[in-house]
Image (cartoon, rainbow over all chains, first blue to last red; front, top):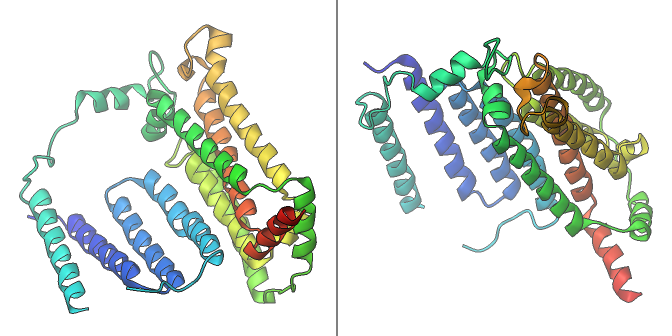
Length: 85
Length: 255
């Protein structure tokens, strides 16, 4: 019998995968960044279900806050749109 | 586009299959194993009152800073090297910094909405309180110096976004101050790491010799300060607009 929290874990992490795929396919880098922070929110939920609150605290602050800000600063120094295929 | 969708969908199916096999069918034999001897050692010793104890009910922090303390110490050094690398690649000397100031002052000053600014002030106060509770309670509840420090860095980022970098620099959050505070945090970590050697004749990082939970608490506070101001240093350095940077460097070439 699959336990309920494992089922929730699978659903949450699948959503994370979907958003990471969308982030990879996005050509607007700022939109890709927003999608990737949604993905990290789902992964943080997954860590919480796996009973790792220490990781959740660090992961949310880094992945949604600091990482996003660093990449926005990096994008501001180059171009917003990815060109070529 | 069609091919992409097929690839993505098959990845998802594969992931679901592996997840099912590992959790429900127990293919790898991970589920249901009893506590290993090492885990038992951590659980029984971290809050004991004698022996190799950390005086801390929070086993994760005890492992991170005591039983696996050198890992965390060297991780702090890696963070230090990363920040020093960013600083040495992007630094401006005194005269260039003055020129950059002048150029930045000519930029059009855009002001955020009153609603945004007021909300940001409230939220920043809350984030600072939460990050302090994460870091200062790190040896009692989940959390610790790194987690608290990164939450605090997020508060500073919100201030950057809602007000501007120049407002904060005028209020005293300059590069010199953040680097000094970073050095203070690192000094606290180093002092706590070396204290057992000089005060009690123990080994480096043998913090269970220190009275009570002083060791873990000091390390958490030091890491909190170091991570907060380390991140702030990087943001302040990276926050200089690109055209200002190019302008200053071009002047250096022309001289």
